[in-house]
Image (cartoon, rainbow, N blue to C red):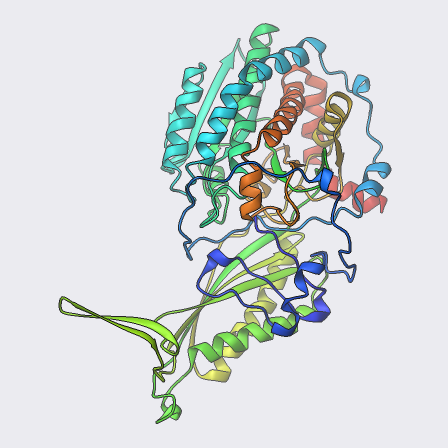
Length: 529
């Protein structure tokens, strides 16, 4: 996830991820300095206060190795956090008490006991993954390390699962028959800044939950099956979408995972996320001498800049819940650049040369977001009109590539209620059902939530000021002991929540019915607002 701090739409500003490419630009440079002072909600509410220092515990360690930036990687799980509505959403939610939920005491205690036993091992595993960051579909170290861990603890493991080199499946059947509970573990890191989205913590949440539920089933003599999927390339690769197409989720009765973020202590959200469509735009022009014969050229950079400013103008007329952001890349752009020319075996380096060549190629990467798949489909066509208009105006040829849609989170309302009550009653957390479940951004788990009853809560870990998701500070925070201890609590709550799908037939049937009826946390909050 990338931390985005936007001014209101009326200021025509935008921001981009440095690792997307060579250039990090804002539409109006005069306003770019304002961005850290505004929330990304699209409102004009200024961020005038930081959370108290005592609520933002400093991170203690930093990733030992960070990947070099790769412009081909696109981050889709992005967002900032507006906590102003948190207390209102929490107060408005009418959650059942833990006793009313009827979870089995023996199962709860067995889960908690097993997770406490595993805590040190899970901490070691988390740091191994954290200190070996790997980009999407390249998570070979994580794949091997995590599958070996699951085999050591008695699970049957399928490596390179679903036609993906770094995906895997670990499963354990207890007794005969019963329902099937799924968990997900993410593994990929971000270009240049390592595990700045905390996927090392997501990895152990899935592993610890799966091991604990399986242990509780054995101890309490309950039949059921636990399945854990190692899901690669959440950061722009849509790894879970590939696994859906491979049938990885078909046998599950429910699937759960959890994601860290910044925020007030022991807070989080189980609300919706944004659907997203990544778009790549390429402009092809014609080179010419910029001074001697500019009329002979078609300037691809002009096309990209014109498209960029057109989207900025469009941003005034889109809804506050919509997001459009992207970057410009070049190839062999000459003015004020360092150019390396290879001639035979000799390498000639021209430093800071001023070569007046009209660029014949420009590339743009865009992310278009809206609260639902239907809305983002409409919005992306309006954005594409801006791209086509720029091509027409500059005489450049254009090629547009749309990637598959990553859908919004449809958080199951009963799973959310159960998780919120367990985490509150037993561990002192507060989860607002209307607060974003993907830190205000997007995730490929959204597509999973359209397939079966699912839950994807986001939970706060201690960070330094301005150290939210997709920052080096968050990568440091994801390795701290404090983050691990809080993750252990979330792991317990998630495992207890999922276990009830296996132990309580009435609850499992109600969860399935609520899914079929389209009852989500987002829908419930919209009906009560």
